[in-house]
Amino acid sequence: MDFDVVIVGAGAGGASSAYFLSKNGAKVAVIEKKPLPRYKVCAGGVPGVTMKYFPFSFDKVIEDHINLASFCFNEETITHTVAPRYLNMVMRDEFDYHILKNSSVEVIDKTFVEQISIYRSYVLVKVKGGNLLKCKYVIGADGAASIVKKSLGFFKNKNMGLALEAEISAKDKILEKYRSKFLVSFGVAKKGYFWIFPKRSHLSVGIGNMENGIRMRKTLIDLLKKMDIFNDKTNIYAHPLPIYTRHSKLHGKRVFLVGDAANLVDPLTGEGIRHAILSGKIAADCILNSKEHLYSKRIIKQIGKDLLWAKRLSHFFYNHQQFCYNYFVKNKFVFNDLMKIINNKFSYKKMLLKVPFYFLLNASLR
Ligand SMILES: Cc1cc2nc3c(=O)[nH]c(=O)nc-3n(C[C@H](O)[C@H](O)[C@H](O)COP(=O)(O)OP(=O)(O)OC[C@H]3O[C@@H](n4cnc5c(N)ncnc54)[C@H](O)[C@@H]3O)c2cc1C
Image (tube, rainbow, N blue to C red; front, side):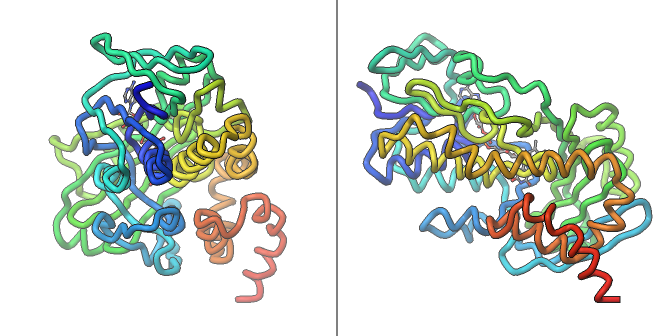
């Protein structure tokens, strides 16, 4: 046997599995098709709780800490305060690689995995060029277009969202305006939003749609032009959002799907890093404790169930954006609970049950 576990993909999910497996003595290889560290199209918003899964510091890869959150609809803007360390800004090449560097694994980058073949007592991973790696388990952490998922015939997600993003070097005055503050605009995408997330020396700016978007590129360029931060050299990258739409089996004999490969993106916010890391940790735990058969069940219980509540909320929210902006987005109690949700301190289910109280709490402020 070459390895105990081969992990396909060195994103947040793959790096997380790599860390928890290797820390507990497993012999692990991580195969990544791109040269590492690799750029990832992502706004890079990471809740503080996600970093607490690891015993090491992330300070050197944090680009900014969010203190303020502004939300717009048409010409109106509301700004809420964010509790310290609840939301951090990172660049994904550095963040994901930081986790991987803290792991004791063999990293094989610039190598494309073509096929996975499962046998009774081992798995063969075939890489481009023909080389084969033999291992006991495979973790498919290979993102939205997962080869592992395809080659093993797992549930195909037909409801992919889409997001477009550009990294913009803006003038100091504009960078200062967004220092430690993010901005989200509703009413510009059918089932999504426009965002500006601050980084140390640039802005990550994009637009996402929880269903496959049309004319998003034009909308994004128009918004950037309006803000005077677009030029002809601005590169706009597009990437699918594998939204969680239903519970499905996420493991097979000797194989596990984590993160985007398992469709763990939040249908309301588009958030996926926290779930990629948690699913990576759960997959490692199941392998280390010989509880492979429990993997899908644990993912559904710890992540999937609440994401289905987020899906219901998302359906209502994006079909009534003006109403929801006025009654929910502007309500600081709703916002505070959303920040708690992304830090594992609250849930979408509880948020829905609390709706009547949000109105009362808000009225009590008037
Ligand atoms: C524009 C945009 C903005 C976003 N913003 C946020 C945000 O602010 N906060 C948040 O929480 N989430 C955000 N998300 C979602 C988040 O980016 C994903 O959920 C997250 O990256 C999932 O991590 P992952 O490790 O599962 O997959 P990925 O990060 O996609 O990593 C998969 C890796 O596998 C590699 N790979 C793929 N196929 C192969 C192969 N055949 N062989 C070898 N390697 C392979 C890829 O090169 C890649 O490095 C955003 C997504 C988009 C598109």
